[in-house]
Image (cartoon, rainbow, N blue to C red; front, side, top):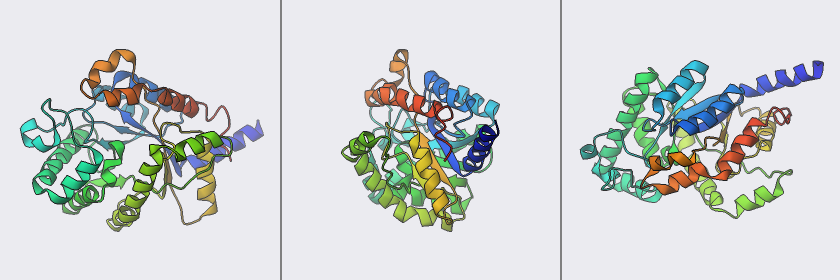
Length: 303
């Protein structure tokens, strides 16, 4: 009994430094339900809400009832914008859905002033919607980490300079963790598209991390959730905790899981964007949810 209590105290201490985060709350009712399971278990301690999600109001209720920390999940890639289509024509296709991929978004934002203006319009729309539910400064991240693209981060920081908006912003300083208990997962992710995303976001972080701190905005010192995205393991919590404990200059870390899973009868919500439905329905998400919910049971949180 004494040992169990000690482990729980250790978990509570680490839990203040390591944020276990779930993205995509509000995307659908079933995604909300599966994320809520982790919240109710006391394992997830922060969530991000999609302002254009089909189940946003339910997501807001989940956050308010649980008093969990929440962030604005800025979105430029999935679904429809909150702004009027005539105000953001460069961001959408003929059906009114977001159309711009990562590379083209980066390029257009760097060289097209009209595109930049329309992106700012959509940022304001999503911020306004979020503040209708949660007034005050905003904790910020984004769908597919778009906010880490340097010209978009500059736009966000310039907006903050004019009128303080951001309480904190997620950054993606992700160490390389080799999982001794799951060597196959480590090798699999090294030889997948995740390694390219990991390298790109590490590069972006080297540019934007210090800029965020310069503005007096809080950000996490470490992050985990790109290299193992779709294949997150509970062991990563232990690796992150050891990293924090060995380096006194590091204070906080964010561990990103994607436990939210869509159901088969929700496919129509992603009409015209089947790639997102395939992402939400994947078995990988189900496995991440199981891995997340088993953290306490398997004592993986206790180092």
